[in-house]
Image (cartoon, rainbow, N blue to C red; front, side, top):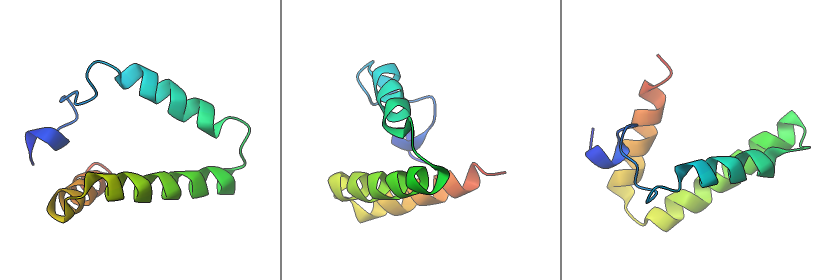
Length: 68
């Protein structure tokens, strides 16, 4: 797994807490299906912003591996 995808790597320039709070706020008041749709849109937007198919595939694999 690349360092960039390791959970202990803070690639958010120290703003991970701000991003987490914004994510929670975005979900506030949404139903479960609306929240799932927001997550799906966000994932697609972030994968597109990543502009690196190999990194996107590695992130998907890393996320799937974290289910265990």
